[in-house]
Length: 202
Image 1: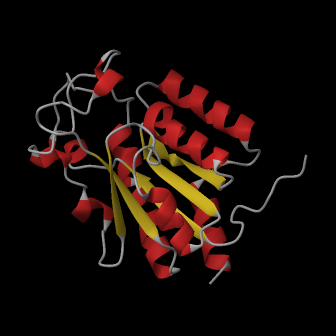
Image 2: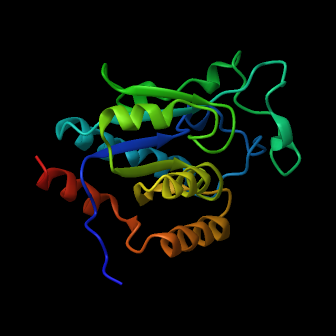
């Protein structure tokens, strides 16, 4: 099986759940477990986003956000996760400054793990005529993985920037990277590879 180009057609960078809590909540006991080095891996997404801006690649920020009364959590709290990302908590805001958010970037709020489930992301991507999704953010084993799977089933080419994603644990992170690579050979790429691919399209 041949590996496709890193970017097929037009690309968009999908920044998944890089929110203020990552940079202001330093407590050891968090609502959602983070693997070691999580914050640094989120910060590593900034050069990727800057490169996308320079190359005129659309950037879409995904924001997990739940109503303060918890009515939209559904089964999400049945596992290891505690209450998180409430709409009345400033930590739920997208990390605008850290990620270099610019006018012209897009924001898609979501209530569930996948950025496609119950959102207008598919309408946005079709309008932008995007074929390749470049995924960064967290968690690798939850929201990144679930978004990847839905994008795969919508026939997008999916690329995960492995040094700009992080999971709930190292083991879960690595297992999800393998699972996504299984679905699309060549899906797992480094930040430098993806930036070079964007620059070649300018």
